[in-house]
Length: 371
Image (cartoon, rainbow, N blue to C red; front, side, top):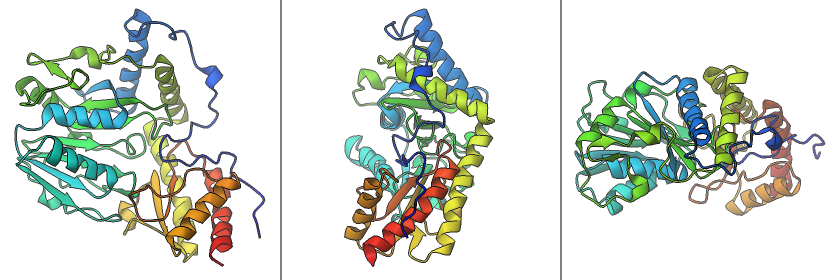
C-alpha cells in the first residue's frame, strides 16, 4: 500500500545538502551585509569562521585554515597548482571527482612523474602502492560512489612527500587523522548544509614549508596564490580572503558551526551521521532488491550513501521521478557518471526520523515501477 507518512524534510541531495534542523534564514546576523569584507567587521566575521573551524575540527597545533573561492574544487586546484611539481605524485581515484584530479595532474599540469591508481565504483584502489617519498593526492570519501577510506595506516608517518586530501563530504562527518594529512579541502555546502561557492583549505606546517620553499614552474592565476615571494600569504588564514566572499554565506556558515557546537561538537555530528547510515544498513539487510554500491561495509560512506537496485536504468529513473512527484525525496538519483542507482545524503543535518519515513516510500516506489 502507498505510505501515508512523508519525511518532514524531503531534501536528500548530496550537494548542496539540506540545512540543519531548525534553520531559519531570518535568524542570521545581517550586520555585515553591505559592508566591505576588508572592514574590521568583515575581517572579524571571516576570522571567526576560521578559528571556529579549527576549534571544532580539533586541528593540531600549527595547522592553518583558509577561506578560498571556488568551493572544494577551487580549494583542491589551488592546492595542486601551488604545491605539486617538486617531486613525483601518486594519485588515487575510485569515482568521478577523484578522476577529475587524475585528469588535472596528467593533462593540465602534465606531470610526467605522476602515477595513477584507480578502482571501479564500489571499490577502493590499492593504497599499498603509495610511495612515502612522493606527494599523494586522494579523496577521503567518494561522493559519487558512496565509498570512503576506512583508515590511514597506508600513509607513512615518516613520509617526505605531502598528502593532499579532498575531504569535502567527509569533514565534520568522519574522524580525520590530521597527523596523516598535510592538505585537506572541503566546502560549506556539503556536510554542514551551507551555501555554495566558498572553499576551505587546511594546511599542515609541512605544507606551509613547501609553499615557502618551492615555486611552481607554471603561471599561477591570482586567485590560486597561497604564497608570494617565498612567504605564505597570511591574510588568507586571518580573514583577508583573496576574492570577495559573500558575507551572507559567511553568516550562514557561522550558523552551521554554532549548530555543531550546540549538538555536542564534532563527535556528536559524526555519531548522528553514523546513526543515519545504520537506518539504511537495517533496511538493506531486510530487502533483497536493494544493496549498497560499496562492496564492503567497512568502506561504505556515512554521508553520500549510494545504492544499486535490481532494476533497469530506466526503472531507476522512474523511481526517482515518482518519489519527487510525491514530494517524498528530492535529488536522490545517482551521479551522472556513476552506475544507475540511488544516492541519499545521510550527513548530520539529516534527521533520522526523515530517513525512517523515507524507507516505506522506497519500497512502494520500487514495487510500483518494477511490478
